[in-house]
Amino acid sequence: MNTRTLLVTTAIACTAFAGLAQANDTTTSQAVPYHYGMPLHVSKVISLTEPSTLECKVVNAHMKYIDDTGKPAEITYRKLSDACDNQS
Image (cartoon, rainbow, N blue to C red; front, side):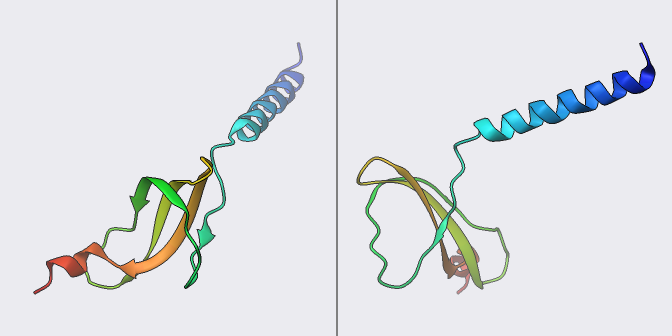
């Protein structure tokens, strides 16, 4: 078998598998940015994340939750970092 044919076939197969892996990943959803007064129907919080920082400043936080209808949802919001809790 020709080496070029083998390399091209391998590259196409790897690309196909990568495409299938991305197509099957349905767990990601777009996080909606929070705006003041937006109704949040949170039934259960799954996770709260924010970037770690040593200084007190406003950061973008991310919350994953289950809404009242049982569907997973995500939202981003701005808050003071956890470092602000340690300042006196």
